[in-house]
Length: 261
Image 1 (cartoon, rainbow, N blue to C red):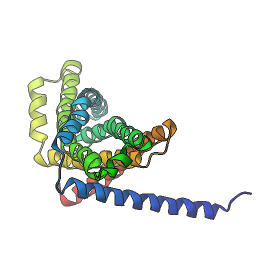
Image 2: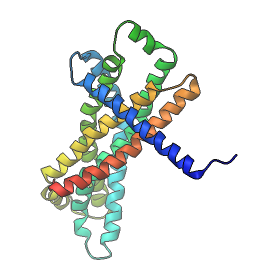
Image 3: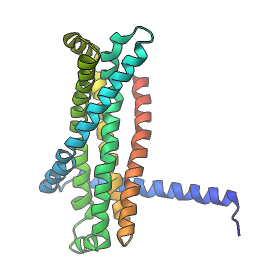
Image 4: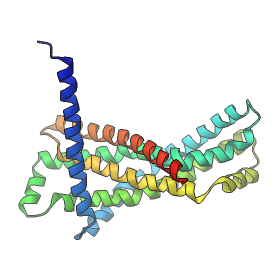
């Protein structure tokens, strides 16, 4: 029997609000464990290496190609109006305020958030988390908080590196492919760049780091038994983190414009 469309919409809406509420409660518990003693320093350092150091190649490659493609397309569009000289300014603005942090966040949503979800999900289905809590150890403090703290620390570092590499990617294409003068290009880049542009991207990076870690831990914690359940948790964490990153990026960009940051 076909269900009433209104019932389907209502059920989906209630399910969405319920999921948002569960995620908010989970995030609150993770943040409470992360910002109050006790901290597991060794585990935090291990997660910093796993999230930050092992992500350097993919972030660097993505940034250099994004910067190069951005410079090429800006030059092509600007040449129609005789505005090729604005390529350095637009590249550095686009990379530092938007593309550097968003691309880094999306790359880590796929690599880190899905990895955390798969790892936590495997621990959940093999009852390792239950065994941990049997020993009176909080999973929020021992498993989730270190990953959350590590993501908050490493994302701004990765974004700063992505900004530099992305700008240099634009410089390479402009100087060696579009016949820009290297000195003039770099001078225009530095003259146009402001601290507000850098801070805007780094503030977003901190938020995105929290989103990536919390989504991975949340979906892993809710993982169901079997390989299918773990795989589904990894997929949901990646998709959820990516959507939230794009949504938060828009909201934060709007706020920054309103306050003049």
